[in-house]
Structures are given as C-alpha cells and as structure tokens.
Length: 354
Image (tube, rainbow, N blue to C red; front, side, top):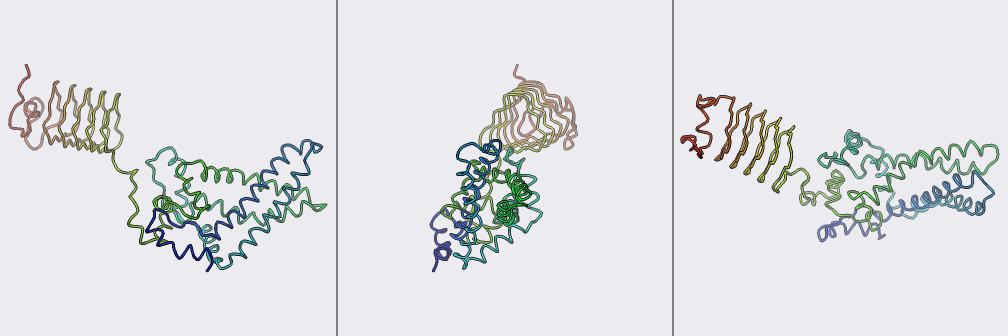
C-alpha cells in the first residue's frame, strides 16, 4: 500500500483522536510543489532578466540567470508529468480536483463579490465552498490553461524566426499571472484567516474546525460523521459583554443587547431595539421605532417617544418625560399616563422625589 493510501485509510481514526483532518494526500502535495517550485524559480529569474539584463545585456552573470531560467522551465515541464506517473494510482483524485476547479456555481460568484467586503467587515459571511474556494478555482483554471502554453512558447523562444513573438506571449502570460501569484502567496503565508491552511500542503493535515468554516461543502461530504461536532459560526452571535457608549449613537438596524448597556450620550434609534438587560441612559433619547425593554431602565435625561414603548421592568425616571403616543390598552395619553410610568404594576403613581 502506498503512503497516500495509508493516509486515506487512517483519516477517520486520526480525525476522531485529534483536531486535524487530512486535507491533501501525498500525491496532491507532490504535484503542487512539482509545479510551484520550478514556476517560482522561472518567475524570479524572468524578473531579473527583464528588469536588470534587458536594459544592459553586458552586465555580468546574465548567462547564469538565463540558464537557471531555462533549466527551471524544463523542470516545470517534466516534474508534474513524472509526479503524475509516480502517483498514477491517485489519478482519479487529480481528475476530481480538476472537475471541482472548473465547475462553477452561483455561490462561487457570490464568494468573489463578497470576498473584499468580508475582509474589512467580519459580520459579512461568505458562502460555503467546495474543496477549493472561488479564488483558488481561478488560480487552478489559469494554471491548467497556461501551463502547456508556457512550455510551448518557452521552447519556441530558443528557435530563430519565431523567438520574438513567442517571447511576447510568454511574457504576457507571466504578467497576467502576477496578481494571481501574489494573491495566492499572500493568502497562504500572510493572511491570518487562511494561512492556517498552509499545513495542508506540507503535512497534509489542517485543523478540522478551520476546514469546516472555510470549505463547508467539502467537509460535510468528506467527513459527514464529523460535521455535527464542528462549532457554529460564533461571529454571528450577539455580544455577551457589557457595552459602554461614550458618544452619540445612531441605530440604523435592529439591535439585540443581551447584557447591561450604558449610554453616555444622546441616542437616536431608527430601527426596532430589543434590550434584554438593564439600561442606563445618561443623555437625551429619541426613539423613532417600537422599543421593548426587558430589564430595569434608568433615564437621567428627558425622553421623547414617537412610537409605543413597552417597558417590562421598573423604570426610574430622574427627569420629566414627554409621551406623544396613546396607550391603547388604558386609553390614557400625555400627562394622564405620566403618573403610572414609574410603577412596575402601573397601578401606583410615582412619588415626587421633592
């Protein structure tokens, strides 16, 4: 049994005993580096040749960089083929990866559109992805489409008559691949949310919770017995800590607060607000939508309410309030309703502090 098959046979056992799962088999990792290493050498030497030696070919060591570029080009042609032949028993795995990379769904388009905003706003959830996300699919597609062209144009550059045209095509493809290379390296080595996955191309294993979060469809299909053990997306849960606001607050969307909230400045609420804990408001409050308060409320400044306010706990009012809406249940409005606002039951008037 090959090492790749051995890894596959022990995947379930390892996943139960550790927090890691097998992301890429040995054959996949070998094929990745058989392409990546010679390609990066080709790219680096090409940059040196174009930027340093093309303006002045008489500079020393030009032949060294030229031959390194040519030899790495030969390796880029031969190494992937030899790797596929060595791991021919995993050919179905590589064909499956190719099918996934070239198969696009609506979620892939949405992922591309939301990737930028989600980078700066963690509240934006990206659509669930398969074994490769949309950016990785683009990288895979460009690679499989241009790899043969790199080889053909690289060979034609050595031949007279067609060398210049081949060089232009060769250079244009490398220039077009530059943002893909930069993005791929950045996501694999720098970005904190995705660099965790680099271990998948080194050891083959990644954290299973990370894989569940970033490649949910692939995770659920490959490890269905582990899907129920993966944590929910904690980024979407409401805050569980007290909140202190030291300036004016404008609420443009519904807000659910599950802990005490202290507001030290004016508050303008333009959407429904549900507060499930004590609230201390030390500035004017303008409420333009219904408000449900399920905990004690201390209001230290005047309150103007333009929509019904339901208070389900005692209210301590230290300044006069103005209520513009009628209480439909009691038929009281304005000053008639005022004496009952401070009482938990609504049957006793608030005693004047003076």
